[in-house]
Image (cartoon, rainbow, N blue to C red):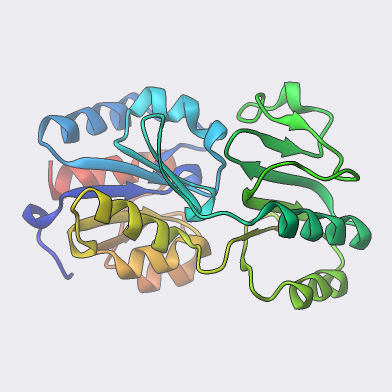
Amino acid sequence: MRKEGGNIRLIVTDLDDTLLRSDHLPSEFTVETFRMCREKGILTAFATARVSIATKAEYQALKPDIRVVSNGAMALAGEELLFFDRIPVEEANRFCRCLKQKGAKRILAGCFAHTYWENREIAASRTLKEAVYHDFSEPIGEDAAQISFSLEDPRALGEVREAFPELSWTSYRGGRCAVMAPGVSKAAGVAKAAELFGVKLSEILAFGDDAGDLEMLTKCGVGVAMGNAIPELKEAADYVAETNDEDGAAKFIRGYIV
């Protein structure tokens, strides 16, 4: 237990399986908790692997001050771009060509102006309806914040990693992987965004559930793992909250600082 509640100036939380319930929606209790934070002058933020267009509904419902998206490669305050750590378009296209050659599926490139997705069912997607279909046999025309994909062959995946060691790599539950520009991570993105608002890492209360949240939880002032988090996160966190389906993050916020 490293911090007292009175020192917290920013709350940052992962979205899926953390702040959101299993139906991928924020509860009314959570929405009200974020409103209470605003009234007390406490900043709020998302830090998510999702691309920016996939956070619009949550932004409208919860009205956070900051959205750190694409695993920390980009951040927005409202619709204003705070920063964009990009994979240059030439390298992004070279990476995507390599993925195609190795048999990767459902490639998604999150850029600033557009999100390109190798999925013909875009219209049926809950969060990515605004994506543009692209099969990546042709190059994209923009720098990328994040490129995610599925590649089941471990040997092929290893060969891709060997070919692009300079990129930042992460993996998700379900087997998807993603790359960002060198040095990009949720923790780095949160630190950069917080600095722009004059907030120190020691003044941040952070929530997460998966391996991609580990560095963020350990570097921020107070790190809270969800009750449904992976064991490694629970071991590293300062506290363990109730599960996402029990509004664990919102309950912790109310009990700790609100």
